[in-house]
Image (cartoon, rainbow, N blue to C red):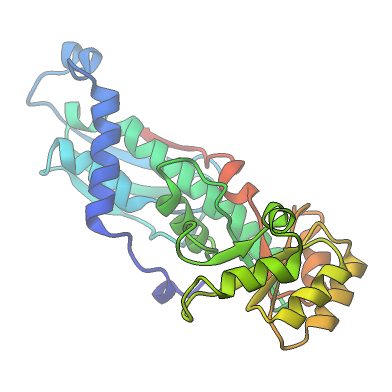
Length: 284
């Protein structure tokens, strides 16, 4: 992955997310366990280590968690977001106030493990589609409140982002089509109501719907739950008229065959709603 393509998360949004998580964890009385055991001025050195191999994402949030509790804590990154780490490798080294490090530990690891898990899952699918033009992309099936972070993690894994919300692109889905009375009617209604800068994508289940969509003129077509043979036929019909996106039934066992059909994009909801956290731990 080219690091230059991974723009850092906006600092303000990182701080807002971490501040909310720390407030949730510390509650009304703070870390009563740590404060009862550890002297106020105690200092410690610690490492965040990888207990399994994977792709790292979320270091800005981990660092912010420690910094918000004690800005004198030294947080030294041993890898960067978007880089791979082997089991047993060190993600970061810390030195500073023991109380603050212990109290921020869970928030830091929650963000780092969750986002690294998404990045790792994405990287695996990207590797399985190497040599094709298909890009692995996410969906809106994200954890409420964490969409920006999860989509950033997909980018760290080498994937690309689909729309961020309902307001930045048109995606006409099956229920829109049913409510409008057909593919052509839905597309016509959209074109009459959105600006010329807004991209339009339509979901189709079969080649007849695809013909109607192409005849009406769209920017992208979502080929939903099609077999590999049908996908290849659809790609042939589309040609250069629109982007071809495959969705549905995508996993490590199927993604290579889907990519081989010639689609431009493969969207995978499981990247954000089902990726297991990468096993990371903080040790003194």
